[in-house]
Figure 1: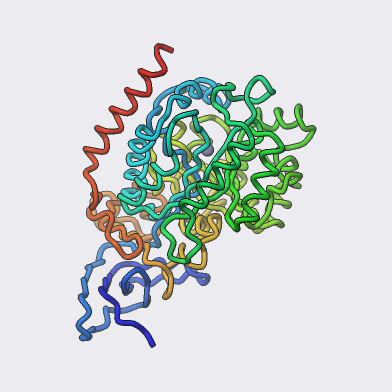
Figure 2 (figure 1 turned 135 degrees about the vertical axis):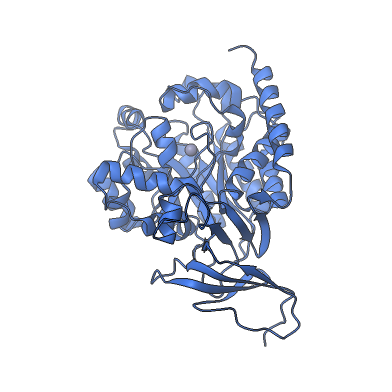
Amino acid sequence: MSTVPERRIVISGAHVATVNAAGAEHPGGTVVVEDHQIVSVGPGPAPRFDDGVPTEHVDGRGHLLTPGLVNTHHHFYQWLTRGRAQEKDLFGWLTELYPLWSRLDEELEYAAARASIAALLTSGCSTAADHHYVFPAGAGDLIGAAVRAAGELGLRFQAARGSMDLGRSRGGLPPDFAVEDTDTALAATERAIDAHHDPEPAAMVRVSVAPCSPFTVTPELLTGAAALARRRGVRLHTHGAETREETEFCREHFGQTPAEFLDGHGWLGDDVWLAHCVHLDPAAIERIGATGTGVAHCPSSNARLGAGIAPVPELVAAGTPVGLGVDGTSSNETGQLGTEIRQALLVARARRGPAALTARQGLYAATMGGARCLGRDRELGSIEPGKLADLALWRIDGPLHSTIADPVAALALGALPPLTLLLVQGHPVVTNDRLTRADAEDIAQEAATAAHRLADRAGPS
Ligand SMILES: [Zn+2]
């Protein structure tokens, strides 16, 4: 027996890119949403309904309809420190920014999260992971602040509770005042799972366990974090193989590549996704693929820091689920996810030629690839009956797109199209490029105030 839905949304006339296993597309297709789920997808006009369920019709003509985009890597707090360390590589950039970040508190994190989420939603992103790894003593509930911001603005959220316990005095990169002790970090991570993780298929919030990187954590933290995640049935996330300097650090300290080091501590597997994976040898690519480890590809951030270009075609060929990530906005000031599709195509082609990554492979990475990284491919990432109603409706008949021959190329190669509608869990959270639940100007003001306060706390640099 099926229950009667409370409401229905019918989107018709759009070019529907389903991103299902067959890659089906329906020019002038129709998608029907009831409550929080997609109930039908197909070619042709909208079916007639006379069952009394309140039904909203959305005219999708001149639009591309895609699954809501999935962001696999971010650091919301970095919204407050954008435009700094502009010519630095990763280690120089981190070293310049750690002192600022160590003054973060709950109130500033909330302002940063709201601004980061606003940029994500208005660029078509319906689900995002946020990797937060700076927990100054006395800063308050930083994970709770991000969860609250996501809930208020309507983003589906995966809070990756990060950690660092390897300060400079013990051979790590971060200053000692920016790290936690191992047991404190693990206990706080478990508390975040208790407080926020929802294992249900329609969950709006999940929590992952996410020590920061090989050069900021001890082997004890890595091992303990993996055990915690597997005991609690949550996913594992960390940075890996981002820069040449990281590879040198791992060789010097552990006599291993970053991939070997992670592998040796239980950090490759189909419940793990790694950010970056730029510097991999062929053995690492094969091992990452064979273990089903996901990769969050962050092309803009990697380019901004001069880190290099991840071997995405090779990773995909090896069987790796590859998603896209904005990364923190101190190394990718746009904060937009929609534009990362184009960026991924361009860097892959600059490296490997014009067929290295197609428009549809880019869209797949931004949707299903991301959903697979986050362990949510059964309920997100494609437009199919039974999946959650996270949908992005892009206008492609306007001045910047009307002559682009292929609707998917309009998104993947053209300018970021206007976003007519973003549904998350069946709710409109963006209409005509505007947030429905908050004022972007207010968010911008609050974030600017927070950024000034953070800078003032740090004093003159
Ligand atoms: Zn990152």
